[in-house]
Image (cartoon, rainbow, N blue to C red; front, side, top):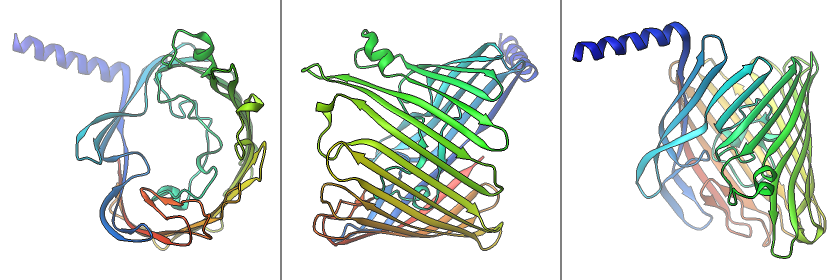
Length: 380
């Protein structure tokens, strides 16, 4: 019997390798800050990670059939929580997909940028401990891809022509799953058109349907963006967003309209500069703004320097908050790196927004908070 089972297992492995493509990969990053200050006290031993929890190991498994008609993506994290408990969790993409015809791809599961439409500009502090000195930045700076993706849902990806992508995500788990208004009202629907040699035009509706006891409704957000890729080593992204809800649901200072712009340019092979800017316009009250500038310099194939400065200028009479990063990274072979950084945040005035560096917050006023993180990263 054991020989029979072994033969069947071997046959299954041979069949899998002959008729399907299976790949394994992962990227893991952790940022323990062994020395920090909240503006009052020096602290130590804090483990912080802007990617959610402390994850020392990860595996991503991707399968696709030989004819490209079916497949799956499975990502698994090992988690060590703040209270010391350990366990497993699923990563951002955990789904299966099929293609009944070449132009249509259907998927079910958790989706994170599965459609490949998100606009990203990640530099400086985004890749370290992330400060709370921004309105919008990093992944999805002008065009997001996070509407309900952590819930299980149905994905629809249609490419009627090579340059045009039409996509939709319909959540299958909601707080009121039997109500069609909530099921489809929490969905996410959009399109992207690629102009060859120029860039990409994108538009989407991110559903956020809710209704209060007074019958006032919030529908969601409309986003539109353009990514320019026509110039070598230059990337520019511009976007706008508009919240759709009954006027009575807007509080003073609540954002109604937003605009963002980001750019990066490789001045040389070793030196790149980046910048972003975002503005939030409320229905009532003063507008808010944030900006960041950063630079990356490769001293050698193994050694790299990075730095950025960011400032949040909030509305409703609050004072600005500034943060900064100076970091050094060293390549440990071809599959890992180690970094050492210094990050700080300070408020300018007694009414300053509480700027945060990971779990470390600057108190209101002009107190200075800082952290000295180590950046461990590995991939395969």
